[in-house]
Length: 149
Image (cartoon, rainbow, N blue to C red; front, top):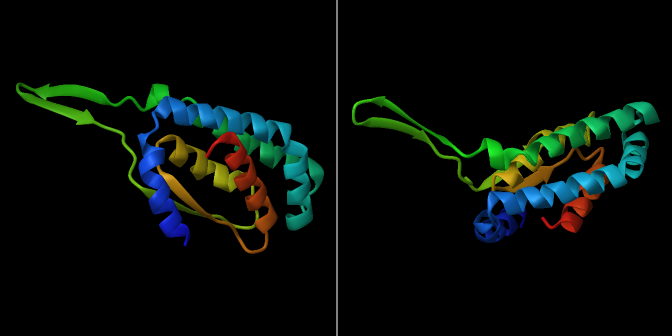
């Protein structure tokens, strides 16, 4: 069912403008910051890190979420005339479904390296966390839903 759900969600998600998707990531970024201690406590509970390391992991992951909010300015594409009558152009558009398979040792930071970027660019994401740290992934998904994903 995850692939079927992602396929079903893709047409509506990709039809949002990149600015609309970035706005959702802004909200998610804010929610991550508001919930950083709760997220860190889950890392401590599931992974065994100390609280300082867990807080640093949440902060580092949220830096990537913040970066993803800048994608509307960076993903505009480019056009370059390389020869008479020959123009090269790059176009950035949603591709479809992205899978993010994450290890147990950084349950909050590693998903943030892929998920916010893929979502902001208009793709749907299936997050597969390690079975050793499921509560961290569930908390991230809960905050994403609250943000509007």
